[in-house]
Image (cartoon, rainbow over all chains, first blue to last red; front, side, top):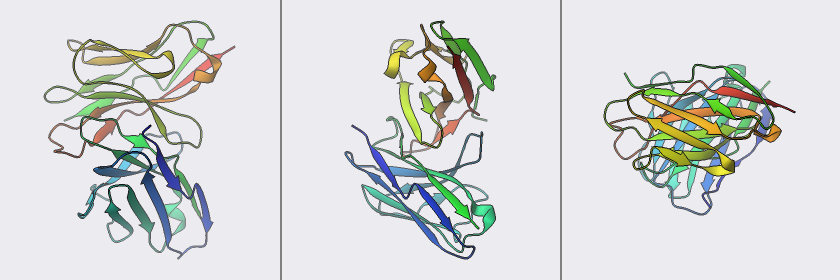
Amino acid sequence: GAVVSQHPSRVICKSGTSVKIECRSLDFQATTMFWYRQFPKQSLMLMATSNEGSKATYEQGVEKDKFLINHASLTLSTLTVTSAHPEDSSFYICSATSGPGQPQHFGDGTRLSIL
Amino acid sequence: AQSVAQPEDQVNVAEGNPLTVKCTYSVSGNPYLFWYVQYPNRGLQFLLKYITGDNLVKGSYGFEAEFNKSQTSFHLKKPSALVSDSALYFCAVRVSGSGNTGKLIFGQGTTLQVKP
């Protein structure tokens, strides 16, 4: 149980393109979803916290107009990287939890490469 | 300030030997503690958690962790390491006062290398 599906797993695109990443909880309802960014051999950096039906809460230094988050239902959240540039290239990981005392369950990540 | 520290960037053990990956934390109130494992180019997999109860927590794949309140530690252990345990391990603590979000703070990660 507690499976989180993240798509796509890899994206390569040109600078200026917008890229959408989907995160789905397959077998549980996720009250909260999280979006992280991870640089090579580093820890996860939380970008934003997303609750179903409400606006995402962004961490300090994360541009909300650059990284658009939509949490349309209890099983789906999307992250759109708008007008992506090479510096946005990274490994993006989502997670979902059914409650604050429960573990976060992670997707397999999306490797984004902007040329 | 709330924080999690994993003092070792890398831990090397021989297959069959016991392993320990260290974690210390600093939070206000009672800690909710977690261990996750990450294989290359994958997301994190949940191993175990401590919220309350017995200080020794058993988790997936034969791993266990010991909560020590006086030392503010939550070290990950396994009696007999396997080569397939080689991966990146993260300790995490739930942020106090994060409301209903369950937001986590992660340690910097420890690479475990198990040699045959």
